[in-house]
Image (cartoon, rainbow, N blue to C red):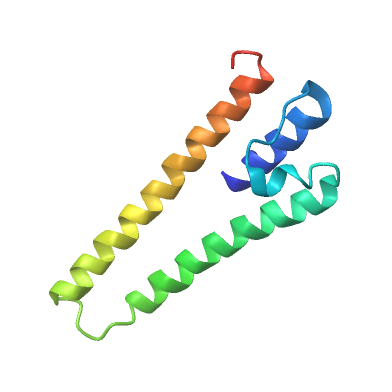
Length: 101
């Protein structure tokens, strides 16, 4: 989803006159390769952090504790939250590209 967000943002900016609304990234839109490196690096860092945290969590020797169960629920909720957020971002990007938004 992060990659699709990056690609649709670049296409929108280059070909459809869209703007990046994230104030942290809007200032570098004049340098598309740098924008893509930062955007894709953020995607990899977020995904990698989730994978490492999930791996670490599941190395717990006792998976029957309340702490493990709550942590596992929080990890799953965070995953779903990120996917939902990025889905909304991608839907918005496609709406901009189609001229709906």
